[in-house]
Length: 54
Image (cartoon, rainbow, N blue to C red; front, side):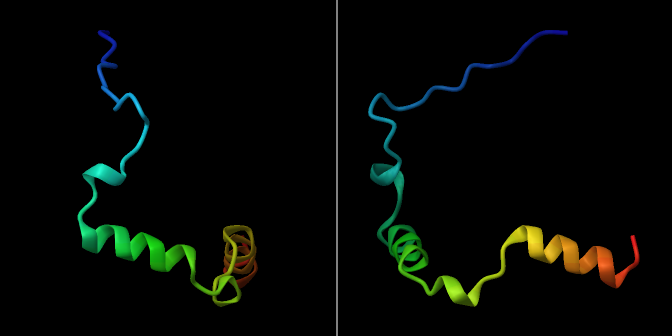
């Protein structure tokens, strides 16, 4: 099996220059969002296990 690993990354490891203004605004708004509105994945997983008796 041939290994395929030819991904090229920018030298400065920055993706901001490749984002549109709209994409950057979306990312910025997510960073500034209220963390209390979200549930962590571990809690969701636990709730689903309990709900479906897994």
